[in-house]
Each structure stands twice: as structure tokens, then as C-alpha cells.
Length: 81
Image 1: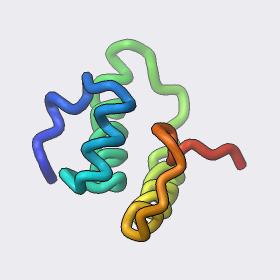
Image 2: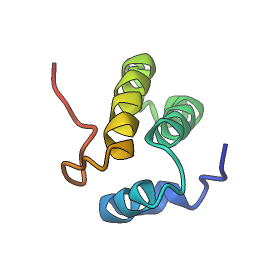
Image 3: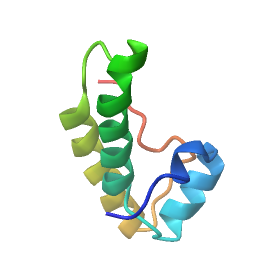
Image 4: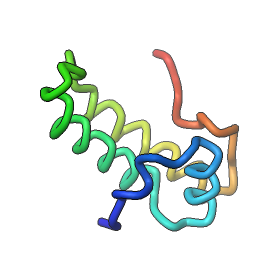
């Protein structure tokens, strides 16, 4: 996995640009954020329920869309079900 230490502080617009430029996949980015939250969340009492598995499934769907050049906006992976 890429080094995501600087990515955690980028804007949504910048993250979207890096995803479209294929600097990393949505799956990799999602996994990095989930792992960071699992690691630092307890320190700040910030994690009540991990939705990592669901987030990773949705990230794969976004990667499929990006491979087909289908973009829907900066929060493309956001869905409510």
C-alpha cells in the first residue's frame, strides 16, 4: 500500500483528483482511512461501530466505476442503503 500519511489531510477535491489520476485506488484509500480510524479512534473515543467491511465493498464499486470513467462527484462513494 502507498504511504498515505499526507493524504489524510487533503481536501475531498484533491482526493478525487488523485483517485482519477490513479495514484491509488478507492479501495486502498478506504482501507487506509479505516485502519487509521481503528488505530486512533479509541484514543479519542471516536469509533462506536466499525463499518470497514461495508466501506471496502462500496470502495470496490467505486473503483469499477472509475475504471469505466464514470465519475459522479467528489463524494462518489457515499451511498445510503
